[in-house]
Length: 70
Image (cartoon, rainbow, N blue to C red; front, side):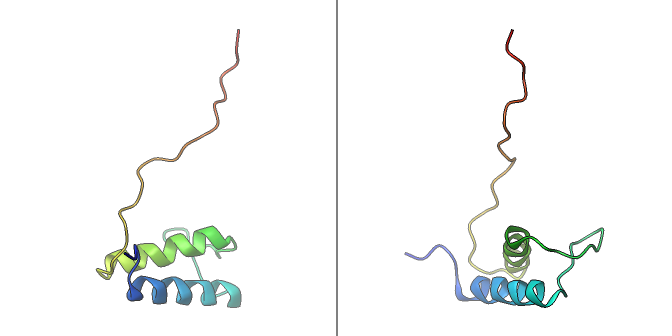
């Protein structure tokens, strides 16, 4: 069974197209989006808001451990 619906695919496609043309901007800051991953994230976020079939967003991001060993 497909994880993503048709509407979500269209939103991501549109976001990627805008990014390629230099028209895609991020939310609050309004800075130009250059990263491919960020463009996909924006497309999926828009799809979620539109009520498309998209898996829920994962909470938190895994980070590399920056602790020093004694």
